[in-house]
Length: 402
Image (cartoon, rainbow, N blue to C red):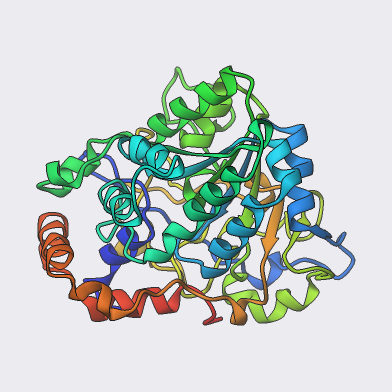
């Protein structure tokens, strides 16, 4: 994979902008050695129908979060089905999405039927932090489903789509530093705190990096408190004021290099399903074992001392970088996180090799206005124009290539 594709990968997955600190530290993936693989006698996950499991979780938690690798066609289809389910609409009135709050007015107008698809698509393309924004028009399917079902539902079964990400307009972004200055984690936590303060419940669909509850040793010094410090991502910040409010489910997209060995051990009795993993062999796997072997959407372990004001850019998955290639001041994590430290379950939508990516047709980029804006964004943040071939290479590798 070329160096040029690495930043494209990060932006395509809409991960948070990194700190504006010049000494940004990189994460380290930890692929589980053979000795960490689960024993055959470890407890098995329990499978439940996905909608039923999510509704049950919403009854016991203020927020149920789905941690995703962005670009899943199967997740998009599942969310459309979920939004139409009556029991889900009885459990919550809010689907929180990783879209800038700047787009909220347009989203509300669309759900009310006063603006059209093109207007909403433009708002989403301007209010999503990846350079490509909402490239695929199929992103509108969830909004269309919510709008259409709302029209035929009484007041007690209405849904809203709540944009929770930081304010953004790409028209104001002239350099990568403009994105780095935005504290997306605190913005998302703040918007969701408002939901919780009103006594409401929400389904939160967000990149997995915003949910991980990895912990790192405190910085050295005589005043350091003993023990570990929780990471200050959006979930960590939300739970500082509302402890235990979040139940998190990871979108299953493989077990990295161990997919062929571990996937057959999953008890898949229903699809779509949620596998409850607490106390099971899945929960004990290192966090880096969760995710497609080709996608940088795995749950990563932040290094000690990483800036807490924003998330950390992801490296492509694979073996950890050699020590000699890292800054001498960058310590390796002292405590590898486990999948069960961050997630209560896996949202299973199919076998790893059968999962599908949302890949828009190339005609999308024949729109001269949109293509010119993409070139401007990439030149500003990546120092090269938009490269369609690289984009399609990245997107096609995220799912179904296990």
